[in-house]
Image (cartoon, rainbow, N blue to C red):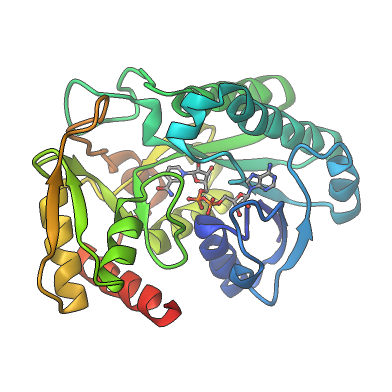
Length: 308
Ligand SMILES: NC(=O)c1ccc[n+]([C@@H]2O[C@H](COP(=O)([O-])OP(=O)(O)OC[C@H]3O[C@@H](n4cnc5c(N)ncnc54)[C@H](O)[C@@H]3O)[C@@H](O)[C@H]2O)c1
């Protein structure tokens, strides 16, 4: 199978590429290396340094004849989207349309796209299921919602099959300290450098932390899932709530260091609790997360420590 991964030099993309190569797939990556790194790229994949907005993208598609596409390249920062809705819209929406037009013109049959828990905003009840009302509280969440609608219409009009994956808070090796889900990455870096970590509010706020290897596995599985399981959205999550105090304690344990933390004023607009149901993905795709949080955090800490 010939696959294009956009954003394949990034955090989730590079883990997804590794799993595709293990499956014997041929992988081409396009990435503008804005946050991704050449060093993340699997030696058996081909990296083309290109922007998803590039108007020659269709030529690459014509030459390479991809069977399917995993589209991850995006502007990934929620606060940046608040300050720069124009750039967020350009990269996240026009970037998607450029990819979908290249798919349409070259006969690509299936596309999987990264969406996000940010589409839900502050949900009234937990766990959040795929049918929960979408109330994004940021332009980033709004462009993710809109992407899903574009995919549904491309499927209806041009018969390009799709899956949109609403990831919870992803963590693991190679995560940068910007973008989404950065709390693990930020704490890990501080602990490795023997600095005090700052916790906003009382630390009781919860998130659904999922290991990047489990997300990468879902990304691969949807590309070969039966037709009956696709043309829809899935949450990709552990369906487990962990509060920030417990997360910090697990990370200090992973580092075998005494806890050094201080509490800061709560941030305006932060969601207090979040947890996504993964029942649909487990039932329809046969996917399930396998990495326990404590083990995933140990891996993440030791990867970062080795880099320092
Ligand atoms: N990390 C999370 O917790 C999380 C949660 C929900 C959704 N997501 C989504 O998953 C996807 C991957 O995110 P990530 O965490 O791996 O971030 P990342 O920044 O590590 O990866 C994004 C990659 O896309 C590349 N890129 C950005 N803009 C580009 C452009 N215009 N053209 C070509 N390449 C471009 C970057 O260089 C980078 O390699 C994104 O769509 C993000 O919105 C991530």
